[in-house]
Length: 447
Image (cartoon, rainbow, N blue to C red):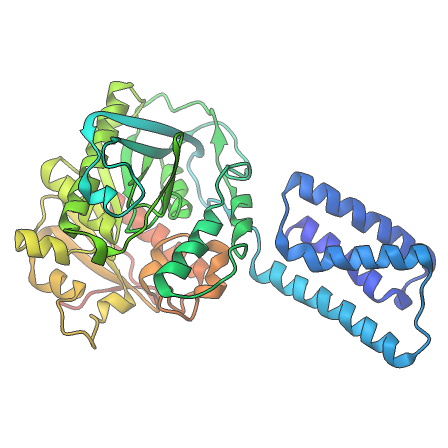
């Protein structure tokens, strides 16, 4: 909880249990609570989780103004119980659905951030994308890209998306409701736009060109879903390029409008084509940045890919030189169906969720762990591990969403902080071509 959370809860607690304080202190608490709420909304932003507390403040103000009192003890008890339940519900919501803060530990550099819009001249919109989204089939390929870069300037946590036109938390809810036929309220994650990230805008870049890491997200993922890991990688001296694969991404806010992913893999004519076109997105992005003389060493590229992004990262590295390839639960079955094997050409670090490591034991179809064990060529370049107590989405930045997904197939029972710690350590050691540290979180795959 931050300062405002604690301050408002303490002040409103006094309003609920006003018999514990003097009338003068009660009035001061009422005035201060209203002022703190105004300042909190202006400085941090509106959070629906505070609504019960706002209601208590309004009720207390009205009650103080008109001097209303219950003479019946039962009614007094009921009114106190009602106010306490409001207070308790808001306190629990604030605790379990906080505004996330993504900070960096042991950083060698501060991290700068910028978003760029790329129009890929001469590349028509691939069918692999427009059949899964509201993209215009006659349009030109457009991408939004986040760049995190190392800097010697000082930074402090900022709310990157507070004033964004889109509510990516709302989009997450819409995606979950549509995909799994549930009916969560759309405002549930609206506070995620208020998230803090330890980055800065318009920071000075390092004098030496930094190596590059490309992040390619999974199906209906988002370029910001691994931001917690990406800013950590950038703080170690990498220029990190995170791509929204427009049409496959959960949503992309292009200048012309919002592009939504509307289909699952079952709606795709050919999943391999999706991965291939995602790998072309990577090439287009690198070409754009090179032509703009972006200050980075594009002869030194590594790739981090999650799920479908793992497949696209592999295809990219088949056609281009890569230093490292880090694959988080890579979705390789479509690649096997097309190419018959996973032929590695670079040092590749596989890390699976424990769910995927266990191999879909109730499913007779080819599992991803079967792919790793039986279809990877040049196995000397492969290093395989799994993350304990985890599921497929423990490789993305759920942040405050984690408590709600902890006991579903979306996320394993591993604590979010533990999964982030393990992912950051794994990424750092893989990029340094170090021996991966195995412990109770990360375990080596038994061949």
